[in-house]
Length: 305
Image 1: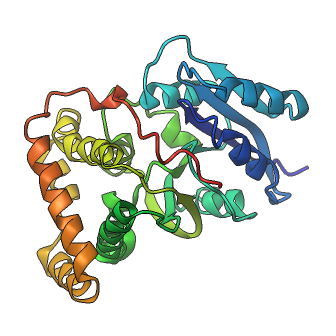
Image 2: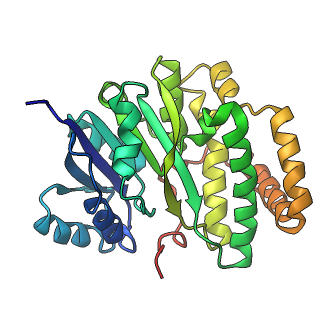
């Protein structure tokens, strides 16, 4: 009998009660390829203080493949993923954020397809923004459209900026060798580790995940500062020249795209560039801040009305 390709899904979660139940049910409804076996869906609760753990336990009682790891003290997303990696031996591990929507019934099959064939050790997929509801969300969406246009164009999407923390698949040979340090930008760390050590990265679409834009300036600012803070921290783990090269975006690609968006969406694009400039200025004064365990966005947690 042919051995099935085994998959574990890991979800590092901190106070995800608003969405974790929906996400788990969507994952349990997946149409998994008969040649694959879904070993477990493991939720690592990073000392959640809401009903996250109760919701997971309730679903676990009905679906034995759903497992809960209860962290006793907050350690951050990086340590949560390390714990998930250490407790599995599946052929692939899919790491998902707890505040996303997975609407594609073939999501598992598609995200691991290149791992199954040996063409990739790390796979990231398209992330989509849910429709904006507020003026601020429209500004942020304009910024995401500019950035995504650049990221998906540069090297046909095969670059650091498309390696999103929302959803990634790791081959066994990669996740068995990979342990995350306490660092903001763990998604960028996974990409840098993969490329620097000779593993294969692929940005694959479909599938895609959906997420809610932050509904407050404070929450957006937290996310921006984490990202802007990450590069300098990552230079402690990899050669600085290598990190800078991976972060570099060619002006010949970036500038025409920015100008195009300013022409077709002048109000929101201009406002986003102003917001981005403010965040970049603030990041200069927060370079020693521990963003790895900083307060997370709250306004992006409720994805279903």
